[in-house]
Picture 1 (cartoon, rainbow, N blue to C red):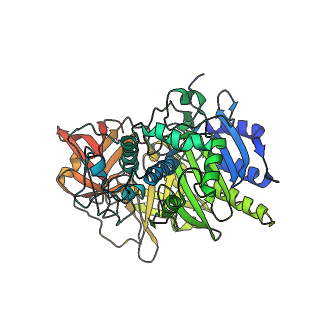
Picture 2 (picture 1 turned 90 degrees about the vertical axis):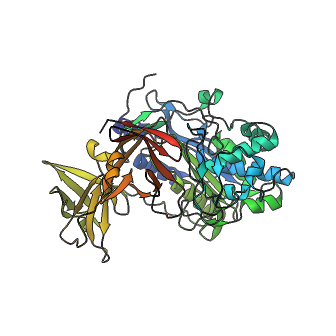
Picture 3 (picture 1 turned 120 degrees about the horizontal axis):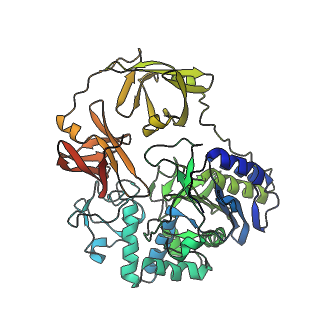
Length: 552
């Protein structure tokens, strides 16, 4: 098998003639509307393949796969292909912890440092308990590296436990180690014996690697990993991942996920007690990362859909995207996963599937399929049109032609693709390093636009145009790379007197230490180290290493 890059147009040519829903269990009366939506959704979202499970509390309703595992060989997806479910793993972790709690082995309110005193964390803001880790309220940073190259380094809290929701993969890595310590075996073996085996999930594993690689769908990433990618950009097959971290290491099939969803709809029967399932589904804290109305329980989001209580979670791996939606009130559920990392999760698919199953159950007409937006159609395109100039004399022209936006680059017009809100991508290689982000004044008029270090304003702008910056900031500007499959490149720029990392603001909290993002309580930090010849050679993001490269 070759590893040549794959053009989007090749996938569309294949998909137009070979999009077939391969069904392996069917108890739903009419799935044509859902299948039609999935076909359009996959093309619009540039997804090579999708695996799906629909379930009712009494059994699986449908197992189906769509598209391809391998685009080059035209290998179709089957229900036996493993998919990485990503952060949906956190539900398995929480249920394993709750089972240990049912057995009297785990106190959810006991400081975790009493269980694992060797943990590299500093808890000066308050003791961290399993409850805090399960609900993402520990105050710890969302570390992706989990172990640090400096053995003396420690993860530091940003706020008192319980005060804020801050999504934290590090917390679930700790919970995995806690399970191993209490149960006397690796957390993956614990979850197999405690959840997979009792439910009959024979194909699933909580370790990515070894024999799971042989059973896994081929997966894809954007062709270029050092910049952003338009939705219909080129994709390329990625290498295999070896991973056993409890933050997201479960792989499963749609049939196994149907069994998992049935257990959830039955209140945790066969896995945890009624009391523990109530803890699992309690909406402890607002979780805007999962949706505007979502709250978070133990390893699961708790939300409302059409007046029903639902459990929901998504999963984003290096090259798989997943969604889980479980309607506890009506007893229907859906799981879907795609074999590409394209910056979105198939939430519209699982929600529409649940709504369709509910309509069928209630004898109502099937709901209308969700609208699929074209990222190059901007309803308020005229808001952004005009001439923008930088204080240094540069100029950026933005043109609106109906609902289409373009910028002028020399004699060419480069189309803009919406990223949501007032952010866009210019679909040209050199411009994809940064988004174009427009800013508005108090009257909601567009008055400025930024692109990496460049900043432009139009005639309506009335604010300051000079922003002094600390001289040492020049030391930190540059392109940094890592070996992480999740995040390879970070570009640090200076704009309006402030440092930005991949368009996230950096707020100074020390000489070379910065808080990442705009939340004042955020524990996520960036630190610049090893300054030589006026340049920082090392950037640490929550303890993970990124090394300077002299590549634009």
